[in-house]
Length: 303
Image (cartoon, rainbow, N blue to C red):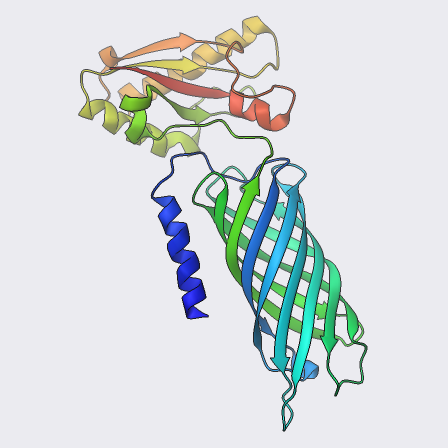
């Protein structure tokens, strides 16, 4: 089992070093998650703890909410003398709520129903038992479509009143769905010519707190390449009138420029400001996720 965990970690870190794509959970995506879980059985079950391979197939209704079908199989030993083998399976249907779907690190809650199947010749209980399960976990995206995942769940068997614990570790692979706008890292700016610096809430124009790290990296890059010129371009979604959005995008770009010059010491002569309003959307303004991606400030690099 240690070899399995090590292989998963090594595989994930290898992808981490090779990607610059935007990561995160997304609407309409289908997920496939092979995992290895440790089943810690309640003493009333009469079973020794055992590892369980399991597969999860999910669908994202939007960035935050999703559903997942889980299938797991195990072979455990009874705690009797002599012990006997018990073949079993855990089948679940869960809902998931993702707290930070736009971030690399995305914690989530999960809860649902299912069936715990056991073929135990010594048991006087039904071989198929209805269960409730709930817990939490997190996934860390190392590419746009691959995440390292781990969670802990309480599995409650209703007719026996037992509480089993399930500790899982594995990978999640995302397919399809609404693709996030591709963003280049600051270190690639000179090659790729433009990067995204900040994203905004509706009708907001102040520099967002979650953009500070990216702005600091961008400022360092500009200082390292003093002959580079950056055009700071403000954008909006389609909410409101075109005239108002042009003014809003101007304020966003100007505030970012002022922060780069006043707070981070970037040479003012290496920057210029442009307002694009709602004229250059990255995604469809018909969806909430698309509008969120369009409310942004980009830097267009001229080296």
